[in-house]
Image (cartoon, rainbow, N blue to C red):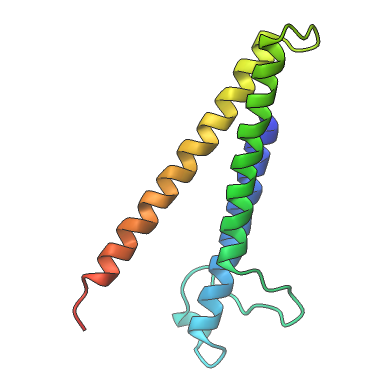
Length: 122
């Protein structure tokens, strides 16, 4: 469970860094620091640029990996593998379920935001 929380914390930190980079590129260097949004900083020129698609793809791959691991562990338990404990199987399946539900909620928010943007009049 701690590893899943750690991965989520890392993803959230990475998303926050991306938000700060986006804020910095939108506000520009010409704006006075007093009128910049809180937390907006200039992105260092040597920092690697990570696209939103890469972050989302990485998150989806992590969810897929958790689900595959849970399915493999459940199958091993069903086949009678003595190395696999029922509690391990249940914890792994719950991790995969929580990760999948989180991704589903993120997808729903993106769809809602897309619909809202598309319904705006110009």
